[in-house]
Length: 295
Length: 277
Image: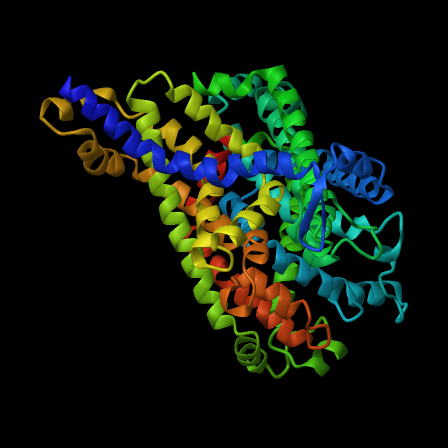
């Protein structure tokens, strides 16, 4: 009996510090958001409960919908840019088509160490009229007055940001896919090769099916990750010009901390959480992935 | 295996990889090279290596941007936050995986649900709470959220490792009269060294580059971390490109140096992180 009472004490001594911290910093504030999202604020003072009015206002605000659309573009570049490129890079390294696999892997993965803020400011400088990109275009096109105008376009302002996201995150997928490719049994690859299968066939018939689960999971995570992107865009454009590059998290930030409308901001944050949880549960429902890993 | 490859595929692979590596590294090389140039040279010859390299940009950025302070803050926030996350995660993993209590499964899934929650979605109430209880603009007010947001991933990684530690090891220690806390500190912590290394690397990198928590939960230069201080200081330097780029290099260099020494562990860490998800 004594042993079991001691065991119980040890259990909670080990578990509770982590659990309490987690509940206090992450779970409790979400509940608080739920309450706050029903309130209206003015001059740092709560004005009272307004029901679901905040949600209604957000979902009909053109600026929010613009931000949602821009998040959509980020999703597209993640799922159709970063992931396929990451698979291709991983496959080339996995099959050792080149010498110096380790060297290439190390070099391509290097941006993972750099903070989004640095990346943002660096690319702003590169794209600026005195940047190396501008200099390059000028010397290739022979137009000495070239400057980049696309970031001022209401329709295409996201393109430089999308490019930088591609630059920054593709290698993460490369490393993730490579780690999973290395778990594919060697024998199945050998067998295919002896049967005279072409590289394309090996990729499509053996490697991709073996990765299907991972590709699916990382797509889901890429989608929910895209909903969160803040640092890079905030440092690069702050959502501007106007709201051309606004995303939901910057919209949230502005309403909460610039206009000090905590109620409205909390409602936005819950919409983001709901979208993210919704998308992930959707994926989870299909694969039952987490449970499988746990058992 | 390599001999069978057609020439064409191999050439294409080389072109693809070299192009990708070039696009990855060129901006960083340009940042480094330009940071040694003065304003005039950057404007006139953006693509050339510096003719008269100077470290003036660095000295001014360090001094004007008060980057020494930001650097110290970054080391403290990231270091303390990482240490606590790793300790709490391994402790929780031992409890959840090896004690055999029924409620462990519930607690485990509570932690994994944390993977879905981002800093953004709780930042408003967090700010609200911290200003009310006096944690706003304090070191603890930054480090506590760092620890909490590090936990979901860390607990997940630690659990899947600790689960693989043989039960016989623990049973033998129990028979020898060790209590569970002794087992944790004398056995589990030692046996779990590989996963501790992985979690430390992933958490430290994440903390080091973290932005929004410090940005919202502190005010004033003396509490800022490197990314936040670089954003407010270098982001304003729209006229002094050399100093701006020098500030960016200062913010980047520590992690790149670390990466050059430990890249295998970093790559393995991210690979493992992916396998567990």
